[in-house]
Length: 100
Length: 314
Image (tube, rainbow over all chains, first blue to last red; front, top):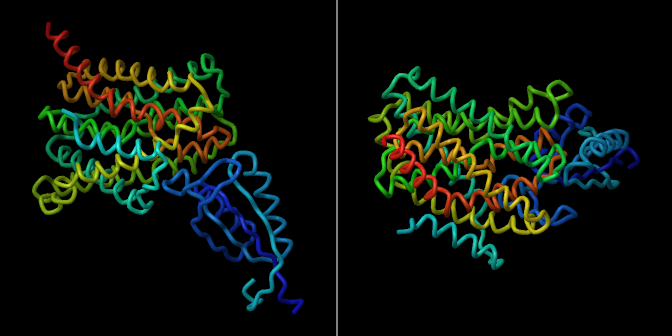
């Protein structure tokens, strides 16, 4: 079971960042990611997702702890100041470890 | 006589201000925008098929020069009179130098319902006006050299939804010509005002949502959001006169100059000048200038064009 331990890194941010973020993830060795359209409220106000600039996305990445750390640090230094972004990690057990 | 499409805008704005649950689904809004952009492109493209492209070169150059000039005038006003941070002043200046396709569409509908003709190649000028201000805005915010990734800026600017659909429509219209387009006219021509009405309904809702941003950022933005389009319209009217456009053409060019972008520029600025606060520029462009232009501006610019034309002819 030890072998199946991974991190789930979840990022909720502005849809405007999607293309940039995908490039970063590929470069930082994420093997894959899942993106969903979401809406909600945070320190930058209600984000209704009713049109482009007001839309938010949730990006989920399953990876090992080191990669999660690298990605989190990168996003924090580059985007925290100017974009609506929150990020959290959780410990998970994956069922097909060879994929991550 | 008030155009019904304007009433749809008012309905959206009132519903939004009263916090109604009304919302156009995002996919529908996107679809309506796509139809409008293509329809505008197609109309201009048909006209391109009728006359040589070279004949348009002077107009194009003049309009691009106007697109570079307007943000350069707006920037110092925002920076020193409005005491805004550099990035915000540059971003708002870019919004006001670029154009709003929605406002253009309303002006076309306004002239159409009064049977006033205008030069049909206006959509070409619309495309030409979208981009220059964005580049000026980025340079104003960043300076010329430092770390601006011009490649990704170029991608964002030239391959954004608006430009691709407008240019695509122009090309399709140009290649197909008036006869070729007859088969798709029911969607893009006959239903144009219906789509415009739905679009304006959602724009009303979006406009109402900007009120919070305006309340926070005070009277300067409100004054700027009305004074800047009036000034730009004067520039546009002058340019239209010197290019020898018809009264309808001058009205459209003044409207183009007066309108502020809320699709292409915000998206480009969010990526290229991320430290600029999007709430400020959108509150001004969408909360003040768009409704001002749609409700009052276009009739004013039309009256101005009539007066200037008569004045010139003595």
